[in-house]
Amino acid sequence: MRFLFSWLKQRRKSIYFFLISFLILACMFALYHFPLTAVLYPFLLCGLIGAIFAAVDLSRTRKIHRQLIQQAEIPAESMAFPPAQTIIEADYQAVLSRLEAQMKALSAETDARYTDMMDYYTVWVHQIKTPIASMRLTLSGEDSSLSRRLLEDLQRIEQYVEMVLAFLRLDSDSTDYVIRACDLDPMIRAVLKKLRLQFISRRLTLSYEPLLFSVVTDEKWFSFVLEQLLSNALKYTPAGTIRISMETPGVLCICDTGIGIAPEDLPRIFEKGYTGYNGRTDKAASGLGLYLCKQVCDRLGHPISVESALNRGTTVRIDLHRDKCIVE
Image (cartoon, rainbow, N blue to C red; front, side, top):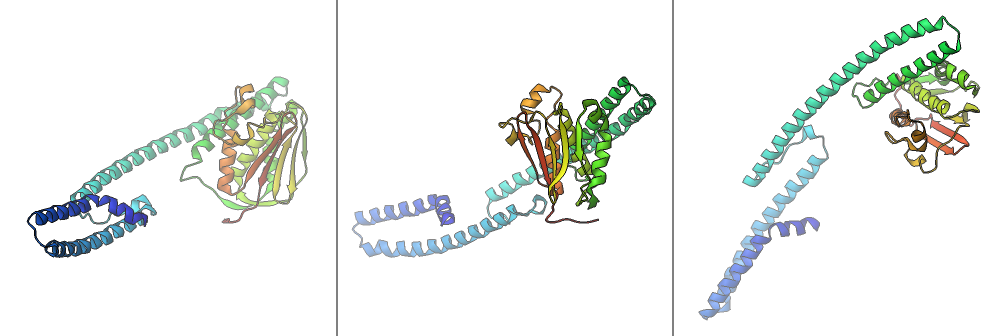
């Protein structure tokens, strides 16, 4: 019915012209005192012919309408316009074809720039890791408060470098997700080993016992999430305990007794660039850590949630179950 009303509105000029023509003829015939049937019969005949043309036009318009609706549901590169019936339709198709060509050119240019940027930062990451490794090797031969502090700073630099690379690779078509069954404990221990100096310098207590759980995930990307979450816990826990446990089978919990998150900030903590009250206190906060964790977890199929209270700590939960997975 909606389509019929739209079609009538589109053809209203033709309908008005037909009705006005009939009224003019009726007035002329009335002035010359012709019988009413002399006007009625031609009008009915013209009306019948007009109705046939209108039905054909309505059918053709409905067919094109359905074809365009179907085209809207398929990828842009597979679209094909119905044959143009009028010069206006041909003009519209020509304009759309030019816009499509411009969009393809713009997309190709954007892809090329993105590829160049990815190549540059990939090379940059590998190059920056060389002096970092050299400094780490130099400092590893010393055991002093200064060397430990410098090693901790180097670890933060490495983490920021990995964040840059993860941010750039997140939406890349070439992101290498390798989904397979992985033991959770080796991943946790590897991350804790990287962050051990921060635990020692802050004198924080770690509560962790082997979880003996296997998760279907991408080991590299899930380790990245663990490192980000534990780094956040370390950053915002000036004293107390960080606990890693399995709350229920398949739900990993990372809890801390830190400063917590304000209630008004909780709904937005996964937004890109949002730092909230804690970020305004810590000027070095970028607002990317939890955003990256959320994006990676969504791609891996692991729902993530955060529960927190000011001055009471924060609990992050990751559901390690997957409805669908591809084991490689």
